[in-house]
Length: 185
Image (cartoon, rainbow, N blue to C red):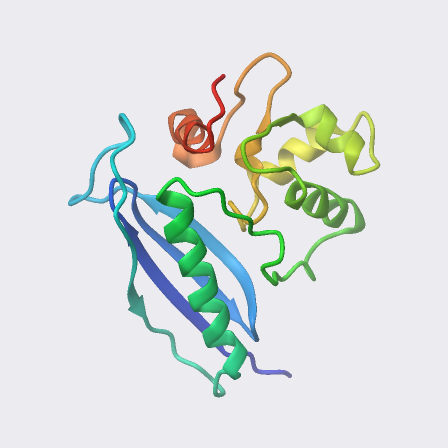
């Protein structure tokens, strides 16, 4: 049995709420987007964002962190701060855990990473670009269960006839992310 150290980093983003990142062995393994809590702004009109601040860095570790896991925390937090401030930020080089993926899921994940900031594709286009034409429903299922939003930017995937859904955060949140990137649908 291999023991893995896990690092949890929660962060607050003005006008968006609190999000959480999980890292293991220098890889991003899970990301929860910021969502409003009792003391944050609702998802209405975009609010000015002045910071993205880590507020919690707690998790029991079963072995010490490698030095690069601390660096990846800081890199991702810095990029998130710039992203939510409206800067054109790329996440396509953030090391992520895709060991859980099937071949199909890996091809969709890698294709998602290549969808540029401020652009959208349909679920059908995503499937075709991933080498699986006519697998738009399966691509949509992958997006619905995406554990690495923004890094695997499923908010940039839309339905052929409109915006499409966006899980528990809903289409208002999806639209807000797209508007942050300059996309108007």
